[in-house]
Length: 458
Image (tube, rainbow, N blue to C red; front, side, top):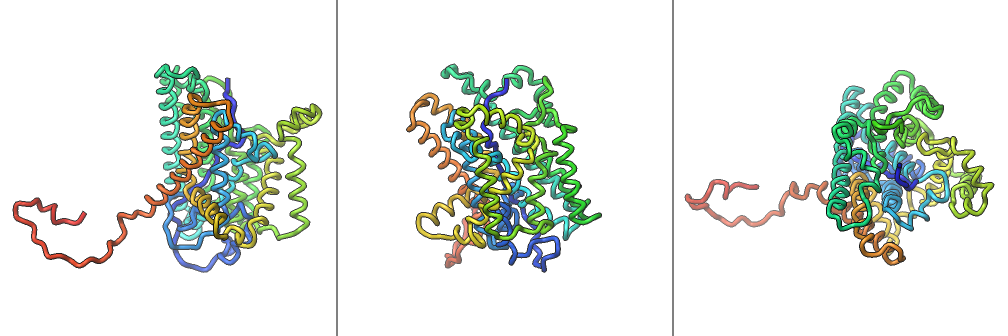
């Protein structure tokens, strides 16, 4: 049986060294002076450029561009939501955005990853060439693949070790439905390494890897027929997936498909990609559009909020009837519409160029912390899934049915995510490579008996 899972799903992000050449923007790239007009959640991916590049696109290089404050802020919020959604038995998961609408943190993760990739990888395709762009994508796929392998091994080992102690009443391996893996590792380990075994809870990174593999194809189509042909192919691929014509196997012992069909979710990814490359024009600031977006968001609440569905059987039946267009696996069209509506409202709320995210005082401190988490999204995402399981084990032994235990477990998790972001950010600055402050040299001659290395610089 599949374990209960939270609908908010993981979520994303990514930075890699982007192409640093100073140049005039082309017709396919959003110039710097137009960045303030891009959708708020669209900017949430600019972590992919040298200093703005997303963590899920690779390592960033400081000092090349000024960060858009909206970029990291919304991705950081997504990382906190991901933790809340994946902490087992977390009462807070009843109040995340996914409980009040069709879309959730997964859309933020994927959309922003698309924008991130447009900056980190799109520039390589445009200015170095298709072959080098493809090589760059393959390199990033390789990195994310090993992150996926390591994440699974760490969590599976932790849960197996917890069960092996005999100290706990709960079956933690069973909680993530991993008994099949441990019962037949000779079959399931090769399947895991080839991504034909994708356990629940570990399904976001394989989806991201598969979508990355589509970037060279889309960029090739753009080269042949322009952005129109590229985006037409994206839409056709989404339609094929939604007609259930293509799925990927998720486990050797059943016909269960991947929980996130990459051929469907690539629509969300390449929407962000297209906004950042300038293939799609940003929407205008309009009161009428804002009203329409707000109405869409409000109208979805009765079909998503569990208390309303439980109290009104007719709405529950309607919610079940529209499942084909709200389906998470195949990225139903109503999820897409709901997410774009939320993104538009978030863009307006952030103000022009993210002006409302540039405050000082307590609000400024809060924004900067969230942005730091968004800047290191891959590392934070990996840590959030590990921390969620570890915290749940400890919480189960201390307190499970009181608000204080729930509050403390969430706060501890948030602290771990924040600490991870700051530590990883510090390491990425390579402080050991900085030139030391000049000091007056003190004449010193090493004794002949001292090792030669004693006089060498580290």
